[in-house]
Image (cartoon, rainbow, N blue to C red; front, side):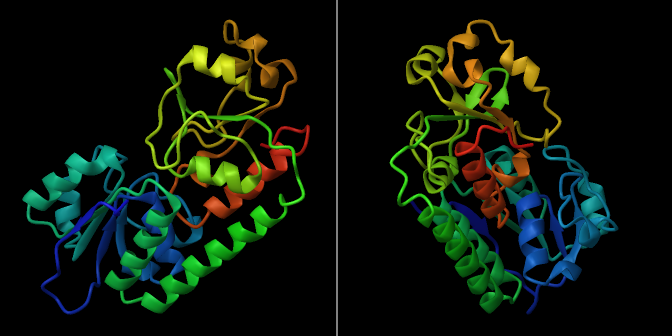
Length: 271
């Protein structure tokens, strides 16, 4: 599947000023050593904190201050995800130069990083970063080669209604050593069919609600009506994981995958 993105070529010879509305891209730009290019960010662009803490804030995920963006005189505004697609179009119509991406699988994440590398004149650094991510994920996967046991896993992206994590999450679960046949790789997250979930009967449940970080009361999940029949609930094999390590399509998916593997093959919840 081709990465869906639109990018308007800049009139200037070099991109010098970027407003990043995408936490993932803020991370990527910083890891490519180009954090000085970022002149504006959202409240969710929180990592690496020491590199981004003093950057001006231009809004949240879908509520952006166009006047504040205009005052920063960006050469480029970066948006991501289907949730920001309409915003990207409005920004483009307002005359801003926009890069928008919406990766749904690992290969598209890699392609996105390479695209950003090309745009900000960090092509070699981007190639090395992608190689590093691939290598580290391969090392994690290699640890499972001798394991015949693959726990059934349910990862929840949202709670109202309960929504199974899709996109690249099935690939990360596979790499970490789990079974995740509730949704196919590259499919967007969808509300879970409760009958399907009960039939699947996950042995491990990971709560990774978007925007919550680790601020989730797991008791809410444990006390859901009827869910006590699920093996993961009965055996208290549940974990809360910072959503930025899983739902954010950037380099820290490696850390998230490591945490998944640790949880899958231990009896201790990972927080």
